[in-house]
Length: 285
Ligand SMILES: [Fe+2]
Image 1 (cartoon, rainbow, N blue to C red):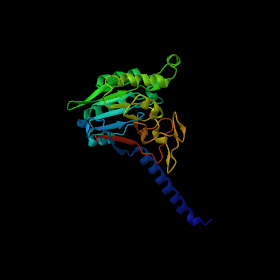
Image 2: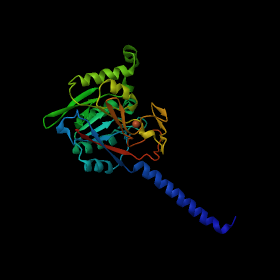
Image 3: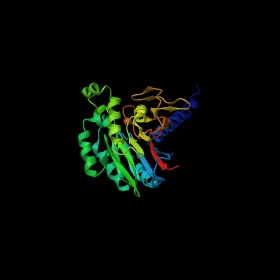
Image 4: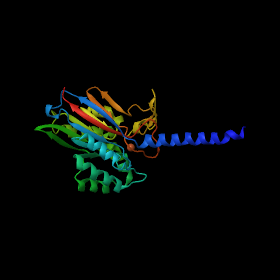
């Protein structure tokens, strides 16, 4: 080997490594805002232009001011959190609290749990923080949202990891239990447009059976690594080459928007899969 060329090769290698490090840092920290205009003739006309900011799967990641600034810029009517605000492997309630405190300044905040809340062993503590801050916990609950005298029905389901085995044996399946929770919410006023907050995208058929108009979900982290044509590689509860990882899906009259989420859990990297803030604008046809 020509010894004179060695320093150049070392230099080139360092440049490539620095480029790779920057790519990975950028890909895991630079938030992408995804916008959806969701049209449905069932929406009351006063909800035309109603904006929802969906924050999913933060897993205790702190973005500094960047996430809040992005949300503020969108001026949403409501902010919804579709689970895994905390991570069960490194639960940090202070980080979650700081985010909720900032978020609620900009719009009312609605929350449903993910599997990590349930698995953390600290969900009761987080619930107390949520209640104290005036964030609305919609685990198996609903709230009517009002805009200039018209209403839609916002329904939430708790993550199915919270369902006890005895309950599953009694009711037949966890899907049956989730469906009955959804039905209870819908029955408050079946005439209203129903918007569901849930952590799990793989249960879209249950949301369809419950006559949900639009469901917002997360959990899949975009499949963690996204490749052209192949899309997401792996998602919890769906395995390899998962079906529901990002974007808009339909099951008959039910639509579902799946957020790629913002943070990571055990697998620490996102590749071609930037952290995502989802903004949905409702449009009456
Ligand atoms: Fe998650």
